[in-house]
Length: 229
Image 1 (tube, rainbow, N blue to C red):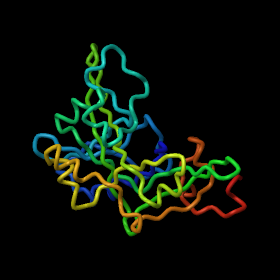
Image 2 (cartoon, helix red, strand yellow):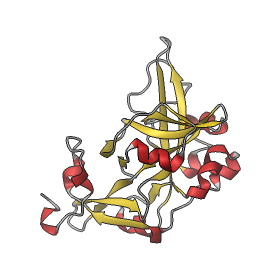
Image 3 (cartoon, one colour):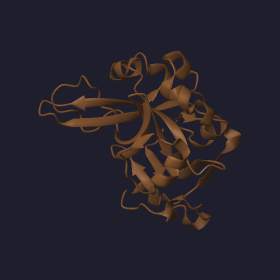
């Protein structure tokens, strides 16, 4: 699963997820990379809240200064077994990251990695399942961070991302509350490959490969003569 997302404006995210309270402030972005802050919905004191979390989970038990990167994603079958995630999972520290799409790369026959933009049709924003944790350092420094959950790729993703047979766990609207509030068994039941018929994918410009670019043009379909521009 490649590490690039697109994020909607926070007003769009709030209309979708209706947090009871929020401390997030963010604008639409088209090139969100690993280890940057991402918006997230989680439960706190019995209510939903919108917060900003760093993408790259740092376990709460980490001693000293944490790794500068953290863990970006965790496969479904590793949530309960991986040392980095077990504590957060057992404490039901689950979250939803609102996105408008994400990118993946296809390895072509001439060994060129062609970027594709992936979205859910007829939805301006959708939620990716995540897990979060809170690290507190000796000087009371605090980092709240998250990892995205990955599941086996559906037909669309397996065909495009032909070197990576995983995809982000896209939540159906009816599973939002089950993921945030359900028991671990119930929450795991919400994690499945999303219906490929409800998704769209198309090639985009390799401009996405540089973090110097973050504009609407990144998600526009690329013409054949632009693909390696």
